[in-house]
Length: 314
Image 1: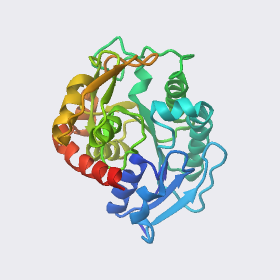
Image 2 (image 1 turned 90 degrees about the vertical axis):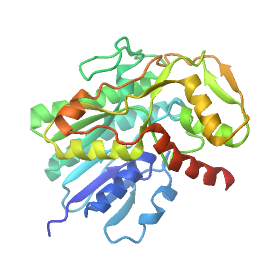
Image 3 (image 1 turned 90 degrees about the horizontal axis):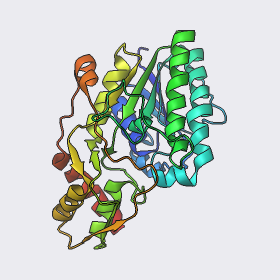
């Protein structure tokens, strides 16, 4: 009778499927909702048949209906890599705006707590380093990346409006670069691109001069941070990521080394508005959630590489 009922939008995606796993392990009843635009049923195959799991094929930008009670809503539906949101700019804007509005309305109707997935991209190409939650960002609203950046910024704004105007229990997580099993080979982001290129014996393609930096967080750490934020009473944005910063050149060399590849690094022009630096300040997460990443990049790369090897060999 006391089992919590959880809705995860984008539930067949990389992060969404891992969240489904976490809430199932916590003894919750989980509804995964996805239109499969970028998600895959293979990510949740292992949950099919579980009495505490159900899947709804649905585009949350159009309409959302969930019969019965809901305790928590986690909104993770959205294209999340440049290759996806540059191909699907309108859908990206819609899921961040109309989709978020629909889910906030659902949470209000069900008296449920809602956590929305924002992103480090709200900081744009940052002029402050590392990035704190108080930094307002350096975003080009009409550039090619603006469809994602501004969708997420709007998402944060409407979520806070529902919190302040309607008294809705809301949580906002700003997710920094995350990696792990179930990422798509053709995701377009640097980690799957480098690993798949190395495993295929192709040259690793770095943008610009490769001196831009990224900070990579293993998915299990991210999920733990999200779970703690959901269970907290903090309504404002919180950065969740790993502050261990590395240049793209260093990361490429690391991938070549762990794969045993003979690949070389080649360079292509830097995409418009591509951020030069990306590193979270996680002081708030440490203080409010008692959270910090437990996995080193090397520890996380071990199961990730195993997953990619199996995917490439298929």
